[in-house]
Length: 212
Image (cartoon, rainbow, N blue to C red; front, side, top):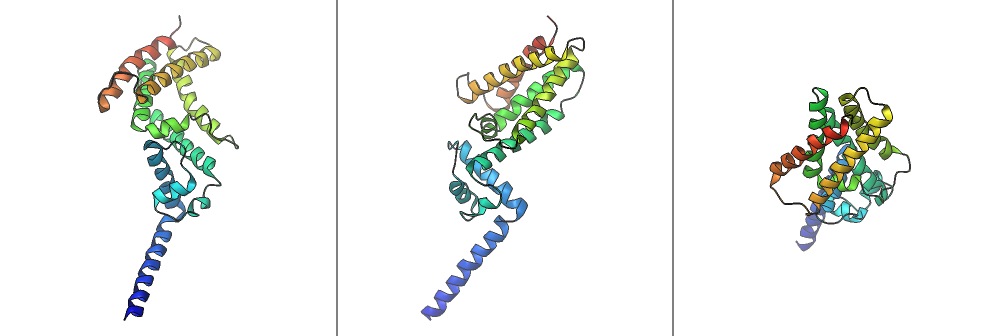
């Protein structure tokens, strides 16, 4: 009887592991599960989790991450790339007349950063590895939306002026966001905070975008 029970228990354990492996290591599911697990750990105070730690958080084997990521640096770069892609999608929805579009763009930028702090911090981690230049490409695409919005506010300005003003606006927004995420600005709740920051940054961005 004991041998039979042991056999049944062993079968159940192995079957459970097989099912988890089938689910976890599906091409699309595994990658997304690992990115989500990494984000959860970063958001929980582990800015640079190991692949083993991420695998444990995702509920997959220690070797599973290597199906998609060569090392921890590659995983964190993928987290950042995912963040830039999502941010770009959010910013693409900012439409309207030039001045209104710029302020809506700033609102969406602020909202993304406050809704996804782990993503945002990872996207601008100076230690990120970018051997193939993909991160730079994605970041430039996002910044390009800001440059375009600035240029439309002042169509008579030069390209160089649009880039310079966009850098000033981004520096202002990024600095305010990081101060808030680090708890160095007065605390407000949820969407109220996003509205307050956007209310300040939108008009400031518009002033910086206009010809002096």
